[in-house]
Image 1 (cartoon, rainbow, N blue to C red):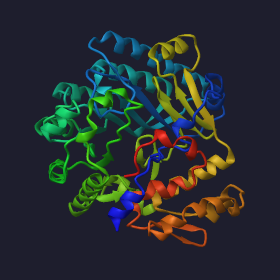
Image 2: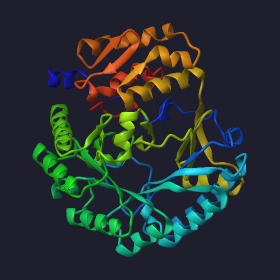
Image 3: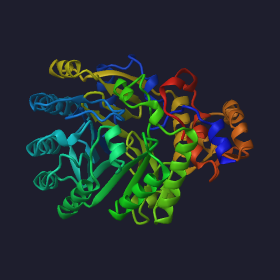
Length: 449
């Protein structure tokens, strides 16, 4: 039955780390509008801060991120200067000195920064924001370039969570995706992290990569669990060479087909659960005593550009080229070209390239989609009441769910939608029924499973 569902629903839909999703942002949102939105924030609002470091020393063939390959440090140093200036511009636009409770560095590879850079950034942030004493300060770390002394500098800067990309431990797969990272390297870095009191460890695994099979997936899961990370993310490789030209280096005939991807995914999920991890949504897993596992039980799980999270901040401010932020009024995304990004900042203008202002309908649909993605259920009548909207306006969306109900992917009881365990892997399809923008962006998304 499930193999039939995979064939039937082998579709491209968003991951719903935002709503509306990024392909629907437009140039109607400018730096001037973002400045106004920042000034309108409630001074009591706690903030989440995201920093994009768009540099790597080599390109991984599977990568879907915005990054630049550099062999000299000068471009990184220049970028850091612009980033520090952007922090000042944003802080100046806020109504007061505000509290930051979550700080996250992504890339590219944030660990392209030197140790002293981390201290410079944190000094700047603490001069412009009240960084909470219990703030989560998280860094995406490349184990291939990390050293014991470098991790000591991260500890000194206040970093307390590290996210490590693994993808695969199999040499043949690593060669095919141009990321040579032996298991021993990853293990050593995790030991260094814990020795330096960075004990909150996330690990990212992938299925659907070239030459992967179920035996390699099982070995990958077992080796990862041996390292005892707090959280594990299990991502399906998104092959989108029309968007990321370097992915053309991956030969399509080496990729598993839909049925093989499904076998890899289900094996990994079941193995992680057998080994004691709690499934979060459809692609995250947490140790039972991790706050994310608790958030599932209390209904406090959220979803943002980092995936599933316990971060409940109503505003995330994005810094750096291509970074995306959100506020109650809408989403903003910075310029991607480094030159355009820097020129805007040094002209005294926030470097916003595009975004989208949220309507009441957008905010309602975003809440519904987050309920589905995080809680596997949503009470449409209750959500509509919050937004003073007649629930009958969702009749068309509910109609779209009928084939999914027939296939036991979800159930409908009055106006309550619930995703079944059978349907958990297809949760994005259930959420997509409430996506009013979807038809105009189908070609830009990854496969549902």
